[in-house]
Picture 1 (tube, one colour):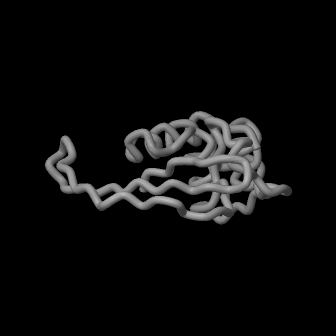
Picture 2 (cartoon, rainbow, N blue to C red):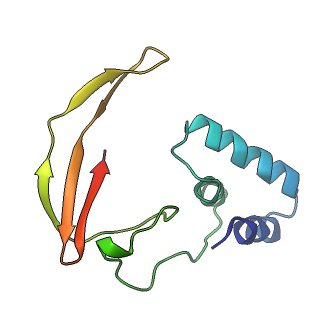
Amino acid sequence: MSLEDIINKIISERPELTKEEILKIIKKREKNAKGFLTPESAALSLAADLGITLDVSFKREVNVKDLVSGLNDVTISGRIINVSPLKKFSRQDGREGARRTIYIADKTGIVKAVL
């Protein structure tokens, strides 16, 4: 579902919101997520918060070899073949963060996931 489709669905369910207001909220959510949300993901989050149900489910199984940049809400079935130790770090704003890298393999390939 494209960003325009999501915005149009929000407007149809909540006509008191203008397209400009919706785009402003989406931009704010993207900024607050510090790069972890695409515009589409921010719009889906807004729709969910407004109680709007969208049909964005995938109809087929996704293999590792089929992953491409820009996908969201993807479920991978495979085997975890490596888990890195937890690495702690300091964020620019002074808060502490942590990350861990895992490698997941299926019959088509291996993918790295940073958590």
